[in-house]
Image (cartoon, rainbow over all chains, first blue to last red; front, side):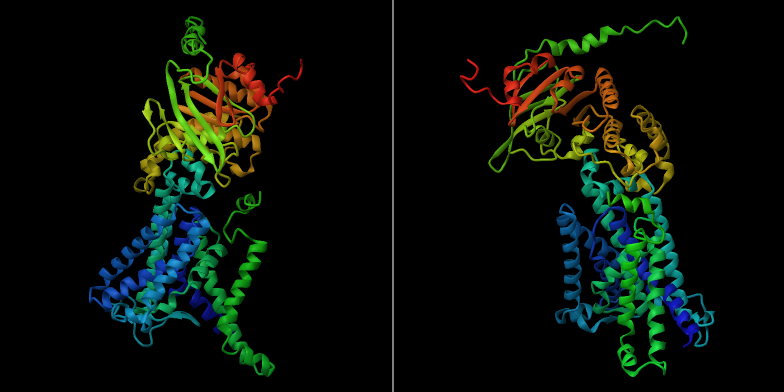
Length: 335
Length: 290
């Protein structure tokens, strides 16, 4: 068993583009759920529109990549508005149901065979993200590697994650600035009690809509990064579990904190990849009984997701506030 | 304090404020000299139950009006209708001389009608100070465009904080300003809610059982403070179901039973009204007694 490789894989996942995407999805959810109390179960829909907006603009319409990025973000705003108008007045649970349904409807429509001409349908869509990689300052020869030991990235990967983490930092900063303001105080008051906010003259619907749009656009940015990273988009990449992974990351790190979603996303990918690599190595060990090895081999990915779920359960039991959360705040819920 | 300050005439303005209401006859629906609220034909039914059915009611400006009545009389429903938290089946009302059309709670609140709730709505995961600061009207920093830049709202926030601390001081909550509101006791939450409502600079404050669960000494000081505010021009309406407590602190009493106004008048008159006693204790059977 080679723990160097296991650790290298885990570290690469923890700081790679997947973690960036998850962090952005979780930051958006934090604005929705953590600060405003909106139970959005369709965050993946925003990522999907970010990714497909970018991909389709370039692949189908032949526009520049930058136009595509803008289109992706505009579509995220459009989804927030379309979702918000009919549903933000509803009870939190209804809102959750509508969001999860809406995200699935969009995924199924985009992935349907009727949509092949526009989105590639089930065949997925791919485009040339050259405009992005042209700006890559990292030398990207076939032997260029960045990092130490088994924790290393290629030049292209370095460029994606540099842009990605800078974006995560900027977005986190903006969220911090607006949430610590009186505007953020109104958001939190809505999370605590909508009627109290109303009785003090706050237009609750308008604030919820603003939060929905902001968190949605941040999720959309995750989708844009996803599209650029893979030079395309595939409907299967936007199944509902993406939303639940984002919730897992958010709760791991601590909801309603500023760094929680970022730390949570890093930790989520580190754990998931560590367990998967560990199991993969384990299943190759000679001393393992044949039946166990057969069971393990090929299902490492599934088992590692299950283990992350188990981690979440344990976390809820022993540290419900997440890594960075405030325990006293959590205990108020029980009163 | 220097001796040469001329003492403020203490009774003169009070008489000027209180006098007009005393000229009003204690009859249901009596017009008031200077009404803040005028309600006409307001009704609301829940299924077969007519929870509120008010023909005409006026609330005088600048005085303390108590809304009393037995449990289930429709006091809170009336509050909910007037503040836009519930929709009336029929009827209309005007606030501060302006007809209320398509009422929404936040719009009415911005116009100066602020209410509190019977079951307190303290914002548990906000600090006590933040709870009160939330009440501050027209804080620029509550607009997203200004929120990003601290310089745009910091000044206002400091002024608000000073005012909020003064209110907390008055309600014995100053020492808890940085605690989360969820850690307060029930009585303290009531006080916090009143402080938050006052922070909003209301013209009309509507308190739903402000004294329930507050210890008597504190309740006394709370109502003393409210009377002082009424003296300074605030209009106060509060709900209470115990008749005794309203006499000392209210200028006018409106009695509600089964959704209807059954009596109104100065406290010493209203609560001795035959109809009111019947409503509270049940009607004496005809012929009983002898």
